[in-house]
Length: 462
Ligand SMILES: Nc1nc2c(ncn2[C@@H]2O[C@H](COP(=O)(O)OP(=O)(O)OP(=O)(O)O)[C@@H](O)[C@H]2O)c(=O)[nH]1
Ligand SMILES: [Mg+2]
Image (cartoon, rainbow, N blue to C red; front, side, top):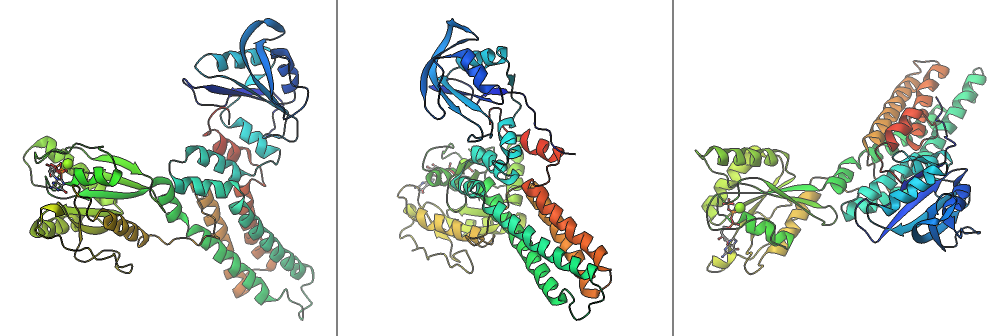
């Protein structure tokens, strides 16, 4: 099934809803310029020049909605590849909606979520992977996610996939030669050459799949859980690491009842810092609930900061936490300012990731906080292989499943080809299936349900 390119002219507010200085209304399609002339006076006569215009009811310049800036982008030099008009008007809940309504009266229809970007893909302006990068850029909450999205939008992953596809098509051509000239034994499509090309493709698929954990950490953040006995100074430490008072600190043991999560945009990965209720046996039902929540977080943590003031309590906290988590546990001696002489922190050793004697910190003097931040980064790095800067990140489940499919087909092909178990034409079907999987990723085969799945999660106006 081939995706249908609708010929309707579509319109939507492209900016976020609510109060704001400016709202941008976007119009795209064959009738965009005609509609523009009906609702904007004067309307721009040349593309890419901004014109100050009165925006009004269709064909009636006396019923003014607003004064705004109008820019037209003539096909094919536009985001969608069609004629596009952008109206920049005053923000707020009403003005943009009235301009949309005027365009609809003049013949446009409201756009579906992601429909502008979908049209960009259908007109070959972007491939599917790049279109997803647009959505990721919009959704980015951290510098890591922003960086990954920009690289994907730039076409890094697409180029890699295309070159893999081309390499596989070359192998397919070699096979076709074998199929066409099976008798010419002295010129087999050099078995070794086919195997080498196949191994190379498998290695590339695996290299891309190996970026998944780093991509997930960049998108979602590394889960760093603060745990330890009541009153250890966990909440104070979270505030210190965040740089502002986000959670309640008090000298009453049992202050924190529920887990509180704060996102900190650190590099290379954002951190999801979680303050938890102090770990202790408790008869209080509410407190027990809080402790259960803490334990759930501990189960998923990448890093746990086991916090306590005294060495013995710290040992107990370490034992309690290690039983629950699979994350790296960093022992943290809190309230270092109260120690007669704070133990000097050793720098985190990369191989073990965790300084054996723990990190001493004080939220009062700031002592040890940088050492702790460094130890957290080292602990996360010990968890995840950092992809080299050349390898684009695989960010979505859709990418993962297509790459896994391609990898599985390539392995089937390789096994069959190596053992000579299947006739070349049969082995080649696995190769073609791998090519199709890669093509479905970049949208070279435009299967409608793929497009639907990708674009209906977008925002309207994009
Ligand atoms: N001197 C000193 N006092 C601290 C430090 N950190 C925390 N405190 C104090 O220790 C007490 C407990 O701090 P919290 O951060 O609320 O402790 P908590 O571990 O979150 O306690 P619960 O929420 O009850 O489990 C408060 O009175 C803090 O002011 C520190 O570095 N130095
Ligand atoms: Mg607390």
